[in-house]
Image (tube, helix red, strand yellow):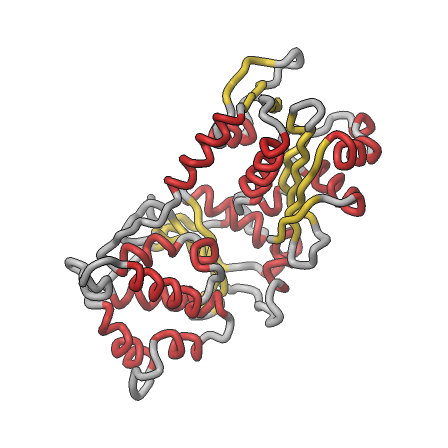
Length: 355
């Protein structure tokens, strides 16, 4: 996703996203006009948008009202939720707001919604109810600074680490966030950076109790993929098998599980019906986000992620090739993601095992 300040030319897209949301629905659309958006963006405050790589299709937006010391809008297109878009917009908005003033900021949202849970997780404090029955939240400058520091601590890399596998397991769920791009080359550069940053003589490749020595992964990969030798390195060998960087990284983790003797359980599966793609708004972005068109998958599976077993991933496969993967904390969450991304009906899954 791309993030930038909102412009007046974005107004049609902002209205489209606002009317697409399933919570905090605008019951009377005429009450919020383009003139209101223009006023909040240019006179009362400032706004931000998340867009697809085309720079125009808005997937979420946020607007802060500096005059009223409130958050006027924070909405994400349901087709793109659970991708961290709301968090990114929220952080940019509050960083800007508290860069302008130390006045407490407030917002309101419908009770019992995911939006209410989101704001509580972001550090907002319950300040009672509005006259219309919505939950009123407030945030002080000190509270925002404290929350931001806690988030940094929570997402700090687990260093120093003595195990390459601890590092790889940590990166696996969000590789693009931690390495800059979901690719074997970026992951390898990250690994080298961590090795160089390690104090002392411990080699993270070999210091992993009850795990295979990662120094032998090169030779094992050459044997597994049918190369005559391993001098080119595991990155080259894997990227020779998959020209798409994301597919290559997924193959790496597939091979790594096999190398470590891990056999993830398949929790649910479904044969993909190409007709489902027509009802998936996100699918068109998924298919065209790279210059190389991704084909439709033939099967989808939801699998536990070993060795942590703390989350699941759903994989879009075509034959033996994993085209893409998305993470979820539960099987239900992974099924909802599959519905949003690829239009898979929730009742179409065959449940094989409990998570």
